[in-house]
Length: 522
Image (cartoon, rainbow, N blue to C red; front, side, top):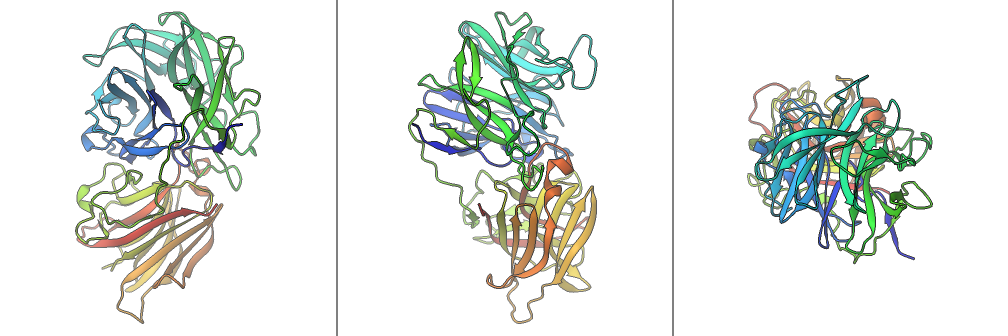
């Protein structure tokens, strides 16, 4: 019996996975919405252990996130490889629509985008046996459109020299179910001499599902599988540990096994999905010309049997970032396009210096924020910083971020001329100070502060320390459930990290962060 490993294979906010194989190497990408850099890319040789090797969209000229809603920006990428070139196609729903970037090396650099002028979202690419490339997309049904989300999947040829769509487009499927909503996330494959179209249906919430259809021509309607959906958890109830399963992509190993990467969420403390949509792996077999997902079980499990591939060794992401290098690790993210002048690893060696920007977290702007994804249900987030606020508008510290309208800011500021730690709750875009404690260190000239946020499922504790031993509570028993899409709405998972702002005023002040540590407690 083969070993099993934990599922998800990428925990936390890693939605809309797309995977491709090149020889014995596997590559995977995910959506990033309003975060920068866009579209992380991972490498593996066993499909279960993944190492991030870069970010596809890592330059401002590739990705404009100006004014993007938290759940705007980059949707559902597809990654494919053909004759020495990697292709990543996706949608910037805020600026420009569907586009393609290419690279000879999956680690980059990737090209500037070529915008296609096509409608809809969730574009995908398919390379046929004759070398032709076909674009597969999602848009409103062109005939007899009945309601919002009444979509169709269509195909059109893509010229690989010009990267332009050519010829006519053909609607090939409207989804498996009568009155279904959001047929989307299409991926085309060819097997047994037939074309298979696998899509997501039901929206990316609890009703999400994976369905499949088959055709003998890309210019004629496909026929849905009578056993659709081939994967869903929507019938299992709200208390099932894995929910909203959908948006899959198939890959065949060099040994002939088939696997699917798919998104799903793990609620905790009730039906609250703070972690967002995560990347899971599930085996697929073929029977009578159709895929059978996790044969005999038909569901995602919290472990998955490893493929028949050599183990790929990956060093775990360090829990603590010391800011000693010349650049940040790939898994760190900013909110929208960052201002490079606001961040420096060289101004003070061994520290990240963040300039106080006038932009505020509450607005759809590019605040001084550097974060990581929440990957566990219980965790500790800590930092050591030096910061001297000059007025009551200036603040620096830690943020738990679901969106600009739903977040917690645990920051140092001035109140009545006294240096004070405050906890700000932003709910539905309205801010409220829910905890405050003076933090002047009368016994020392040392300006260092250690900030700690402890999450025990949906209960949060905010505390600080001068020396790292005795922590002074600012507020305990704070509810974390508002950091879920179930309260905040949208499509993203919780991120968290370092933040500073002058709240609308010009400032030359800054905060120095010695280190930041995120570690899961379970």
